Length: 467
Image (cartoon, rainbow, N blue to C red; front, side, top):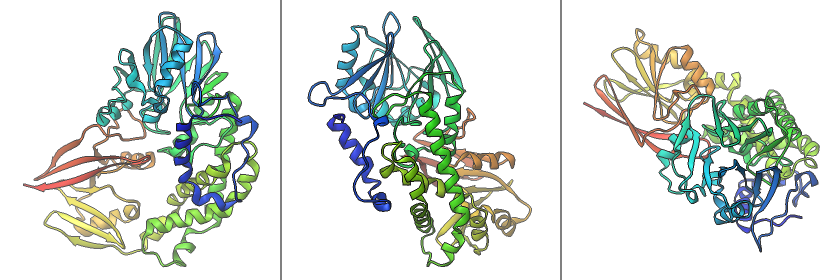
């Protein structure tokens, strides 16, 4: 049994605390870790890290829960990611491999757990996607220096010494700007927080911001010609078969979730329960359906993937929530609930349905709404007709992230979007670019003030000042 860095144990326990509510869905106690999940031993009492040579001059550095990649290109080293919890152990690991300096540091994405030790490499050129640059500029975190070289679009080719690397970005999966790093000559691929060789992904598909994009990422990875994949977490690196296994696992979760939603009417649940808080009611529905349908998934996979007893049910619940929110019956449910219109002043209106609200601003040329929550989507045409039948929806102000389906809807309708997030590159994501964004519509000034992000949402406060 491997020895794990004590700090990594603390990190893991924080993850596990989020899942204890699910623990008794199957049985008491914890499953034995499958042999296929085990990797190099990490001795916490001596070095606190392990290194493994993949090919000549290419090394994986482990600490028991995180991974990064060091590449010797002749004149120096390229480092891909610098996990925060490795800290100074990362410097020791690199020194054990080579006396050469790290001259290039590539960020897979912007999360601190993967690049929080970047500040140790002050003289390195830092390379990342523009979306990661945008995030880090806003974060202003001294542990994560802002990239010095960025790219937009889907690909950047790098020739550094005797090494060729290709950086790819196919859109939102784990978080905006999460890139794939490919070494075509060596047939080595690095993709972080997508695949977990020998293990179930962490909580809710590793907290993917877009689970459909996360699912699609497996197919995108398999389009590469690779023999080795470095995945950023857990106990070992993987290969093509590991990606295929997890793709099968994720696809099965989506299939089971879809079938469960079809067989267990969310409408029956809502109609047979006293609903005060709609969001909590949907969460409870998803939890119950996940518990009822988890056992066959667990029995098939728990001897193949470590952590199924902890994380497996969270993926199923997340997928059930995904299909529930897309349910025509749910949209019909909200359409059948009458809305109330409250006039705030000559131009502003509050539209209410139970405990949900929609805010509408009437402009000279049309209507502007804030966020357009799911509960009002099917009613928006009738609401605007009630206010002024001669005008239509022309503008939506977003205070939080919306998925690609919403963006496609607004694009098809020719609706302008203003948000303190950038979407200029065509990715299915908005991302914060400023602490605040001010703009005017007719005789009102709007100010979107960023208030930070959680694992899956970015949000702003909207202030409106009348002239």
